[in-house]
Length: 85
Ligand SMILES: [Zn+2]
Image (tube, rainbow, N blue to C red; front, top):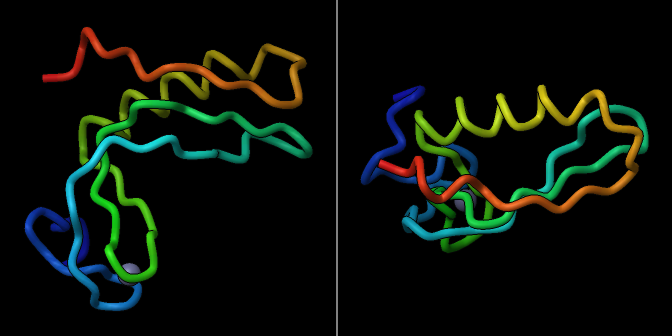
């Protein structure tokens, strides 16, 4: 079941996953947090844990990689909507 969250149940608590667009915080490094808005994710209806779909993982990883050169402690950026398939 690992990696197959589509139309599935929450791996954490077994609750139903719902597709939605979320703002998700990521810990970049010590004391640095990036909030990515508008990320397509599946969110557990019970524990509200967000799970990213495959392509979103790649997009967010790239965003976080680029942001590592910034010294900002808290960044809020928008998920690049134009590239959402
Ligand atoms: Zn859950």
